[in-house]
Image 1 (tube, rainbow, N blue to C red):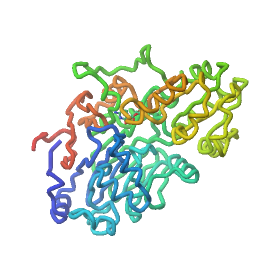
Image 2: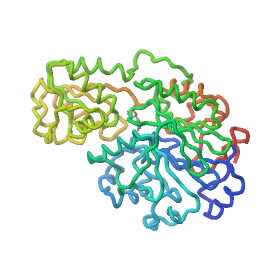
Image 3: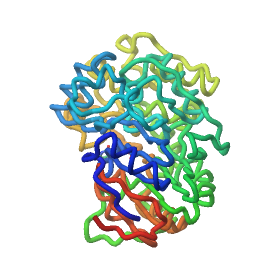
Image 4: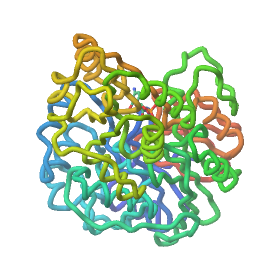
Length: 454
Ligand SMILES: Nc1ccn([C@@H]2O[C@@H]3COP(=O)(O)O[C@H]3[C@H]2O)c(=O)n1
């Protein structure tokens, strides 16, 4: 892998001059190499460019959250760029909106044909989706598009302006110029999640998106490993590696271990809590349709009634064909009843929590606030504690254990590994060459033949 140049220092003309004559595939990262989420990179080949993904970095500190409270569809791009939640990528944003950012080139002015591919609909992968110039094609799996449309109808879509998307079937390649792209289903806690194989000339690049092997679709991940075998370049997430001690030597393994919940283990945990003779509240991330299905099934095994929030009920109806009781007014729900299982989403938490009886149970299942790193976490914990509400965390991560992700890497045996989407990408080990990509640096994808030098 050969470092080509600092893209940030290139003028528009030199981009054209450098890429056109050699017809070599290159990759440049713009964001999300050493953060959890917000990975944005571009693969360029023969004057065509594929950008993936287009999420906003998740930074739940009080200052950022305050700035985000001002967001609307018209100011989204400006606020995201000012807050550095989206990077300044030339040739992606509408020309009319980049004028406030000197040096940033708008989509119409950019000489390289660009398309965007999206791995899945978590906000750290799609938060900036509606800030992309509408003239740029955006591709996602058919199932992601189905989820997008349902969420959007339920009023849950990223900030920015409505536009159209291209849904693509799994396994069937499509082209962006001479770049061939194939979407594969992957095991993640988001309906429609995909990994990609991107082919540029004789080079094969595998981009995993987010993945795990402990969900109900682990088969997809094993299938993808086969498709990605010996890729010239593997770009993979490393969320779980973020939390490893620095002196921990990461060794790939498929083992689950004792203290670890696979998605399929959660139903037993939910059932035990659902059956308690207490008022039960819960929340989970709506895009995890498998968990929605499991909660509906588990609730049906009890003699209690499930009450979903309007959004979750709408998703259940549209994506699972399930009719589940809901209420337009969660503030008027009967929080004293031990006959109800009430889905209280975090958005309604503050307006409803005073009505919740002491001694109730609150089940937090991969929902907001996401964890102690989230600045809203302490207030959430305190609000439950002062009301004597018992918190139970039934968490099964959307991300593979660090050992599992290393196992995937070991199995794929890429010629070059680029671990990203992690606070500690350096914990992941490349069986051959490993590069920790730097933001704004363009690397030639040469299957490890070149030297990683500057
Ligand atoms: N420092 C952290 C830690 C975690 N996270 C995200 O929180 C999510 C909790 O559910 P999960 O599926 O385990 O994935 C975690 C990260 O995406 C994050 O974005 N930043």
